[in-house]
Image 1: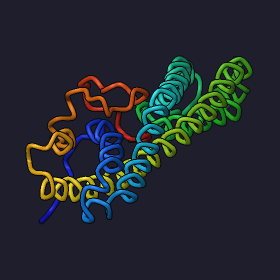
Image 2: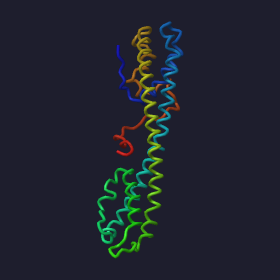
Image 3: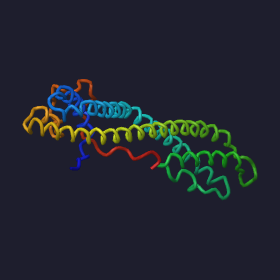
Image 4: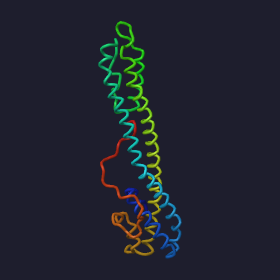
Length: 232
């Protein structure tokens, strides 16, 4: 018999403490139930720890991503403000080569670094350094540095968040497989109408139960799809 692995994570989080408590109090009802006592507790605990870590990190992750994108946007705005003067004063300058992909922070930051190099090295048609060279570099350099720092932090946060998500999905699959098998065993021993069997069904997770964890993260509200991966 296969197992359905489509149960939402928040439902599994609600079922995990129920399964732990049911397994502990029913383990002596039948030898077949006893063999699940330790494994249900272990796998439910591993999933709970992973899920809670993921939920706790979501807000810092979103903050880091937002800060990285904000820093990149500030750099882009400053870059664009210098392009008209450079088009006027630098022979052969191609404005389209700078900041043409503002939605990709890595590319934008690289463009910002190149633009600073161009401004420092450029000469006017008369062969002189740009009269506003130092002003432009002073305006751009700090924003390039800030964007680099903030985006590196955003990428590190995203890697950590993805790692937490992978751990949560892996432990969820492991726990759900164990839960389904334990639930079937309980049904065979006690019947489908058994109260403990019923509370372990996924569709019952929407209803609060005395075996729920009072410290569990709140049930998430329906939301639109999350932000795409960093750099997309």
